[in-house]
Image (cartoon, protein in one colour):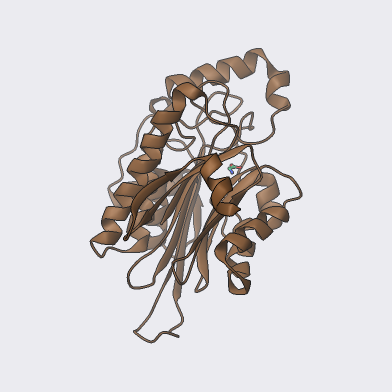
Length: 316
Ligand code: GLY
């Protein structure tokens, strides 16, 4: 399994250890599920839930705010599960996503409820909230999702709108001015089922009603018999390129790492990152931002945190 905490600028020094702890906790939570024989879908949702609950990541509590000062989150899950025991059995593909969510602390859990409880792929607004009630997911007041950091950043951006406009990539809501964003996870379980999950508060300076890539199948996440991917970064560019579908399809033509790098090159310099796992359980990742931190879980080596420098060394 791989987990990412967003691509963007390097985290402020004061925030690095806390972010590292958050990513490791997410990978550990998902890893425990996989180690116990649990499903990839459960592992990615558990990992993303940890990051949604952590105020230093731009998802769930701590999401950055719209220009009007409210949280509007997007999240989705996708899974490719094997039917039958044959190595060639075609997988069952399932997905669910939610957009513009303002009253649920863990939109990734609501995305799963859409997948499990409805015939639909993507839901928003009052209809999505009704699904939350059916799934036993508690609704909160919109202001309960606004962290002190996100509010401080919003106030700073309002005071200096030019600085915000000059920074079109997604920005970390917490931790001052550093840029880190969307969270996601991909995993393969012992039955060779694959799953991807992505959750975000969006990009800085977004208008109310703006929808990014994170909940859009093929862009912010994708899963098929070949692999599973989750993206982070400038949503408009990721949507135009269909980043995650491109990365997963390229898995058939080389290592996941090469596939991730090729997919990122397709973005023509837009700031983004992608994590990838293939049907053999091999992982890959690439980004075009200043930094992207990830944590991995492997049943043989356990949980590891990869800093930007370590990622560069591995890639080389
Ligand atoms: N990648 C997150 C967004 O654009 O909303």
